Amino acid sequence: MRVVTAAVWLVTTGFGIYLLCLWLAGGGLRRQRTKVTRYPSVLIIMHPALGVTSLAAWAAFVLTARRGYIWLSLGLLCLATLLGFVMFTRWLGGGRHARDAEQGFPVLPVILHGLAGILTFILILLAATTM
Image 1: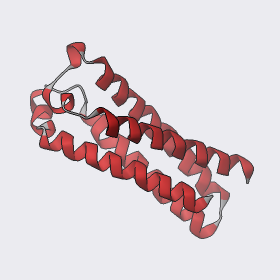
Image 2: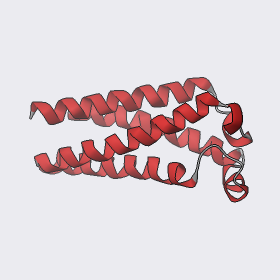
Image 3: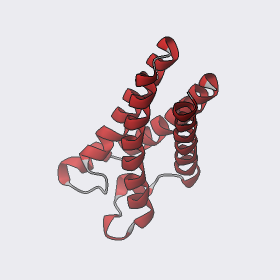
C-alpha cells in the first residue's frame, strides 16, 4: 500500500506541476503584482508547499515506520486539500474572479489532479487508521 500511495502521490504532483506551469506561462506572477488573479499568493505558495511537506512526512514514515510521521503527513495533507478545494471552487466559479492566468486551465488535468489528490488522501487516511 505504501508504494501505491507514493505512485498516486507522484501522479498528483505531476498534474499539479503541469497546472502551475500553465499558470506561470499565462502570466500568473505578473497578475499577482496587479491583483488581477483569482488566486491569492497564499494559495499559490501554500497548496504545493503543504503537499510537498506532507510527502516528505510520508517518506519519513515509509523509511522509519514511525506512526507520528503518518499522522503528520495526514494533517498537512488535510490543509493542502482544503486549499486545493478553495482553488478549485474559485476556478469553477469564474464570474467576478475570472482572470487571464486561470481561464486557460484545461478541464481534464484539473479534474485528474483533484481526483488523484483525493485518492492520495484516502490512501493515507486508510494507512493511518489501519496501523
